[in-house]
Image (cartoon, rainbow, N blue to C red; front, top):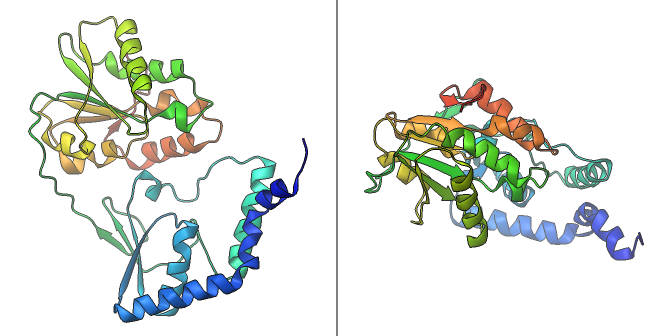
Length: 290
């Protein structure tokens, strides 16, 4: 493989931060002026801290502004358990990480802050609990719902068959003559959605209706209106872990146990570890269900 100049620049793209100090300093002054002119007292960022937000945090710290982490999904609870990286990606990561540290910029899981805003309590943190309120939607017919994260797109080492086999564990829990709705992720194509529905119908041996949920509304709004005795399931969706704060009348499940071992970058394994440790309200299907 030819190692062109373009590839060399891409490989060491992280070091570009050091070659653009003047631009970064200008951005710092612009951010500082914005904070001052708008009398900003608090900054809210998500955890782990992305590099695109890290400059705002650096300036806020210097200006004595309160820095808050707010919950934006289950990654808020994963701490430092990260992805597996090959040797090349490890080198790229550390080149970029050290370049940012040389500029006084920190990112990821190693950032000091003042408060954590979360739905669930966090030990040894300056924790402020978020209370969720949903208006709900008029969906009395929804009793069984699967929230489909496109695991075959996000994690190419997982096959379509492995995804279907995991979903079938939940499908087989749905009682005879009931209806199961599949809510797809916006990034899933019409073709992919049809493929999932058709294959599930083919391999399901029960007399249940399997239909796509067509309305473009947040999953949490559906969950808030689901009827007593219903169940919502997914792979790595955050909705099931928030569910008990939204609607205590239904069951929350995840079939993550059935696919995480096929993820060769370790992200789903990390999420499953967090599910087992922190979210005991989830039914994880540790034993085979048919």
